[in-house]
Amino acid sequence: MTKGLSVKKDENFSKWYSEVLEKAEITDLRYNVKGFVVIRPWGAMILEEMYKLYEQALQKRGHKPSFFPTVIPKKNFEKEAEHVKGFTPEVFWLKKVKGEDELALRPTSETAMYQMYSLWIRSWRDLPFKLYQRANVFRYETKATRPLIRAREFYWIEAHDCFATKEEAEEQVQEDIRTTEEVMHQKFGIPFLPMKRPIWDKFAGAEYTIGSDVIMPDGKLLQQPSTHLLGQHFSKAFNVKFKNKEGKEEYVWQTCYGPAISRILASVISQHGDNFGLILPFIISPIQVIIVPIFTKQNKEKIIKEVKKIKDELIDKGIKAEIDLREEKRPGEKYYEWELKGVPFRIELGEKEIENKEATLFIRDTRKKEKISLKEIGKIKKLGEEYDKRLLKKADDFMKDRIIECKTLKEIEEALKEKKIAKVEFCSTEKEGISCAEVIEKEIGAEIRGTLGNKKEIPKGNCIVCGKKAKEVVYIGRSY
Ligand SMILES: [Zn+2]
Image (cartoon, rainbow, N blue to C red; front, side, top):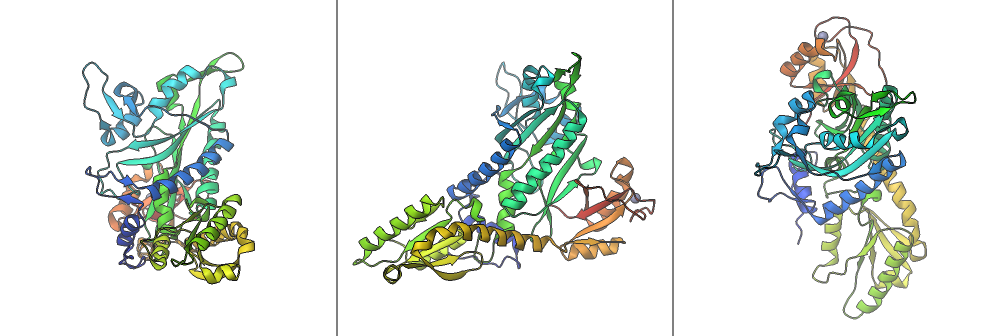
């Protein structure tokens, strides 16, 4: 029998998280390479649903799919100076094979993709040029790894776009934020703060980076999709040029965007789950309705016939339904297990229900049971939409009031203690602000996460650290 969770989410979030991963059969941590985990079928099926929605959103905005090799020759890697400097400590190098180039396992694919872009892009007619790929990438993380949150291999999407002008590229960065909003927030129920990172924290090789910070139940921030204005750094390094309308050659302007689907799953689990396990949004649950028949030897045939009819009807209505026919488990054990796995709805059906032409419907997030007429079984689709709206609202409520305006370092400390994000006026997120950021880092162990990435906020006062006139309003938190 599946054992329940031994800790409550708000008592020991870290332990709760590990237990949910194991007991809901999302991952198995017993793989014998440090920092690498196995994603089990239930986890993989959820990721698949998430990938689908993300890819649809990218395709809708003109991105086309592609697949690039996992290995990148060292010489490609070294073409963009800042990039190589930023990423080299994290690269897994393959043991040199005789006569071959030295090869890296991709930590990200700019240097794999852009040499091909230089062959494909010729004229202004080829622009905008928007590709994405689903990929696993490898980073030699030196900080402690945590399954799905920080792993040495993770599963993501990377979109790499080229434009004729800087303005179009900057608009793409904003479009990427809207994609995060549409998919991660509206569909998966994960609110975030789009944060334009300080210059010392941008992607290696970018002009600027806008990350999405998600607040976890323990108050720490987890970086979710980031989008980068690469400018012409890479197009110059890889010679990605186009002929403009006047026939003159120019370098393209580039952006890239990277939603790490496996890490977003970590946020989904953390945001929605409760003391009984996972709570999956209806829209990404691989099974949306689990049907548990309750039968004896005598009425087994009749009941199974009935539940199969219900399953077919649900599937006809576009609802992902399954029947749990296992005989070695009692209904109570099955309930428990599907609750742990986060399935949104459970239908319990026995002799009495069939006679009354109704079923018992259990709803995972509220944990309430109600009767549903078998004739109206299709209304679960609508209930599913309402269910997702409840999860979204709950997540938004959690996020609300998280941001506290602070005037002193002491106030920042207090805010962080209460698992909140501090909003302060600050001298600068350019080079001249580094020393003030270091003070915050040293004295309160927190980071400047950046300025709002989709809206300019104007400060009125002075920097909270040095007292000089503030140029920015920044957000401060502790991160994973
Ligand atoms: Zn300052």
